[in-house]
Image (cartoon, rainbow, N blue to C red; front, side, top):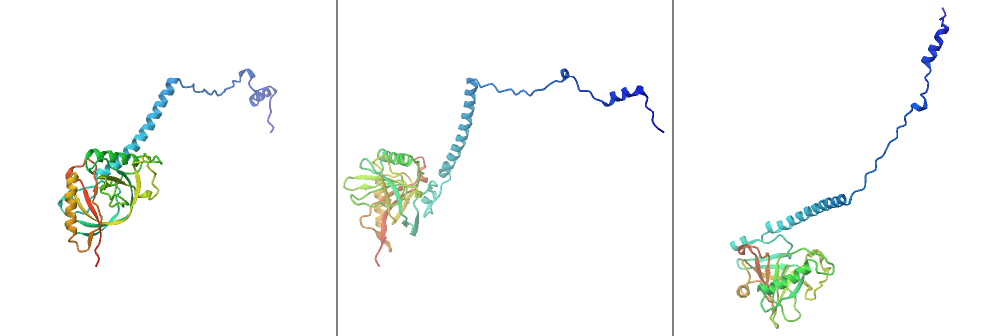
Length: 291
């Protein structure tokens, strides 16, 4: 049976199936609007700069504090040498680089060491004494300036230990002993020399000093007799201990004082160290006795 569609329903069907586009006037166009950030005022720019500098300073401060803590620990947590008695057991030294050596023999009066070669920065001390505060302070400052940047590389180098004060021969001298500062006496002019031992990583490639009062030298390896003692060093104390060491070495069965050997004094600690914990050493170069 066929379906009948009445004429009156056709317009209705067309109106239901045909979608008329909306008139142009009824279409709304949406545009995305990008708002640009207004430029900073001079005050805002200054504030931003201040915050950036504060952040950078904070970062630098943290690094400096970490470095300071590392350096402080070298003094707060010192190292100790093998002790022969109670006096030496109380001594301590900063955990800094020092001259390498091997102990050949030891008794209750001294020990014999074989030192490896090292480099020093040296200067002649003013005055006629090796341990007066004025002369030693001036010499220490001259060497410290070189170590901490007054050199051709403008480079700050690490501190080492000990400071060595030694007497030197008047001509063609070779230096004895170890570490950062060495003081030597020139016999004909009644002068002393002070030397800083240089960090070993530089070897012979050390930057040259800008101050002509400072010279760089290589100290050859040698064998020395060493006595450790605490307290603050005086010239009278050095003379007394040197004489005693020479006397004791006369009875040594293997070693004797080398001809022309002059005393050398090593000081390991900064000035603020308590006297009874300070480590000082006097040494004389020795050689094996002929059999």
